[in-house]
Amino acid sequence: MLRKLLFIWIAVILALAPAGTLFAQSDAPAVFCGDLAEADCQLLTDTRATMEDLTAGASQFRVAGTFEDLGGALTGDFTYGQDTRFNIEPATLARIQEVRAMDEEQLAVLMNDQAAYTEFMIEILNGLDLEQTLHLTLSPNLRESISAMIRINLPAELDVSYVLKDGVIYVNLGALAKIVPSLSFLAGWTGVNAPDAIALFVDEGMLTPPDDAADFQTGLLLPGLAYTGAGLLGDDQRAAMFDAHMALVRDGEERINGVQTARFLTELDLVALLADPDVQLWLIDVFGEGLMGSLGITKENPGGVPFVLNMMGPALFNELEYSIVQNVGLEDTYLYRNEVDLTWDMTRLARAFGRQVDNRVLVQFITSNDNSEFNTAQVDAPRGALVLPLGLIMQLMEGMNQ
Image (tube, rainbow, N blue to C red; front, top):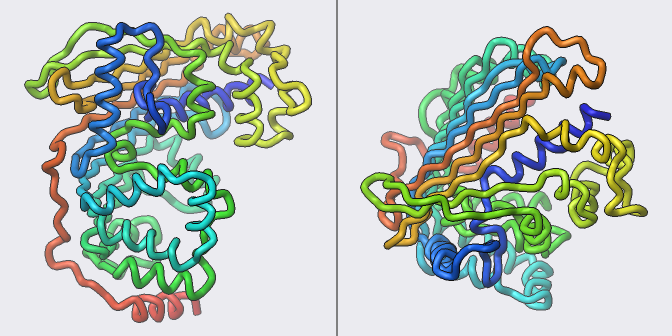
């Protein structure tokens, strides 16, 4: 039971990590202010509006994770980096904002019209330029464990790069060949026209409007929120659930890249959050009734506190250090930095549950998201890239499957 509860809590904390608390909701007032002064709340509100309207930007997202003596596969270290640049046409940005603001009836009309839905998706692909490089490093122990689970021999380091430019998606195939040795003949950048691919998927019945229109609308994030680490918490209902257990304070000022920023610090009441009926119902939707029921959390009894949480709550989280820090420009109201630090020393907790522990039992995640080039970043197509007709790519894939 303890392992299940720890798994769920780690998942909840990671869900919170990229979003922070500034931009938890998608409609006005769109920010969580808690007991902040009116001027500080207005600063956050202005920042939300500034990031929503962002047409270009660059971001460096980093995660360093450590698992010590958790047993099974969860032992080792990893680092993950994601470098992003984007720019979006103002008309495309306005169209996304329009769909996000639709009422239930308007959204239903769009979702029930295959042609209109397809046109909207193609409009995004043509109007958004995006460049991302992803880098993952695994320690030997963690790499071996994950490789065994997914049955693919992962390299110690993995790089994936792609670019979306003027409707063409470019992929660095050399990185893909490192994962799948049979593709070792691939090298360099290759592109395919994304709208053509969308049209093909529609013809083949592989792309249809989602059944849950509300979830689609909620997940339709603006680039200035999605790629900068702001506003990823989710829909309004889920945001309000977390807000009820958050405390937000102004924690002085800090200079970042020559810009004076206000620093905001967030803390959570983790035990109260897990005992919240609305949070429990959300967890049941995410993890299923079976897993949550084994912890005493059911739809028939929302708000019930699991025995292990009721008895061990203080011990569970006594040695958990968790903080969210976000830096907002005082003059330009850009979000310059997110930082989420989680350190959970569970050594004494493991011993309390009868486990023989010789080493420290620890989970640690340190994340940061540094943003720059606001409204100035540009994305270029890879030099020397080969753009192949979609039909040729399909033929090559069919040949590989034979």
